[in-house]
Amino acid sequence: MSEIIRIGTRGSKLAIAQATKVRELITTANPDQNVQIIIISTAGDQNKTDSLAKIGGKGVFAKEIQEALLTNTIDIAVHSMKDLTSRPPEELRLSGFLDPESTSDVLVSKHGLTLEKLPEGATIATGSMRRRALIRRLRPDIQLVDIRGNVDSRLEKLKTEKIDAILLSEAGLIRLNLQHHIHERFNPESFLPAPGQGVIALETRANDDRSHDICESISDPAQSQISRIEYEVLKGLNFNCSIPLGMHTILKENRLHITLGIETSGNIWKQWQVDYPRSTAQDDIQGLIGDVVRVLEQS
Image (cartoon, helix red, strand yellow):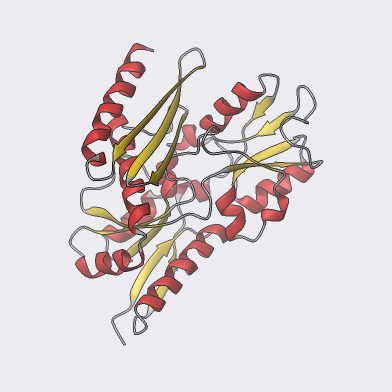
């Protein structure tokens, strides 16, 4: 039996389901490997009332897990990729990415209605600036309110509070076997998901080749390239959830097809569509990053 590999995760049902999936993939690929799941409480888990923007952005779900890597408390961090910041600690590296069941956003409504059928002035709860911007484009009359908490608590708030619908990630509902709650699935080609939405990202210490190799052994090569391209955009924009940003990337016939959208000042939506050869995409994406930066500087 090999030395134990310790994987760290948040303590929500979804996070544990994702870590369990990672453990199963590791032990299937490496039958002699013993894997232990270690649950870590993050600042985002501890503060479930204030908005993410107020408590520090999406990095509040990753910082403590990354600190556990740095202090050798765990060997592999399991993240929802969309929770990662664009500036990870230099001593760490992203070592693997798992193909998502879906990258789409979905609507869960109190009375089973789609977005189009919701009454005028209906209330939708979401903590995402991106989802708010996209809903405003489709239904300017909708009232948008903030919501925090895990998937179960959000579904409960939908039942008990004065809101008509909530927006969630389809992948999360699938992993929790809760997809029967979905009343509408948005097309990710137009209702652009967050970069990395639905993707499970695996992070290790930069000098830990053993853990890195284990992550690579279960990682999807096509998804790895897609995720690294999307992460390059986040780094290039120094993104921290301060602006609404959506991105949809697919690999088709050896080319990466990318749609990226942002909301600038005045609630103006700007969108780009590009495609690059797979072999040069990592360099080619710098042109798109430069275009987006210039728009942001002018807004």
